[in-house]
Image (tube, rainbow, N blue to C red; front, side, top):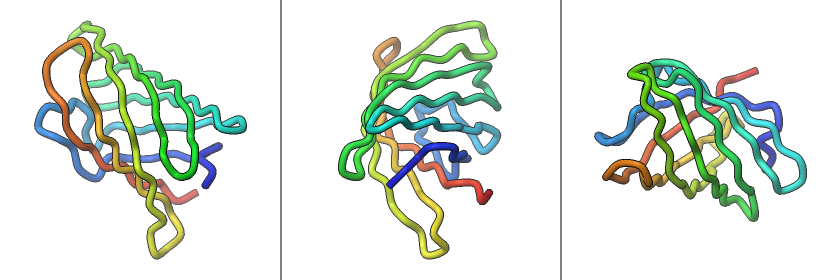
Length: 111
């Protein structure tokens, strides 16, 4: 599985999550290293850095929210290939700057 030059939108979010259907996530991948940038909705700017190994994406994230607060945490994601060939990301996140954890689901935007 490759995430290089892919983009995703949120299809569902956890109650303690701050991403929404207005959030877009763009990836760059070099080998097993993955970099991501996300924005939209209540997220002014967010970045993630991690690795993709055997279908599991692990990363740390940091984001500036429209409230002006900066928050971050860590995530482990399972990748799924949908029937139409697009990818679905099941993100299991844990906040490190506030309390809470949950699962967000992102679906790949067709090119």
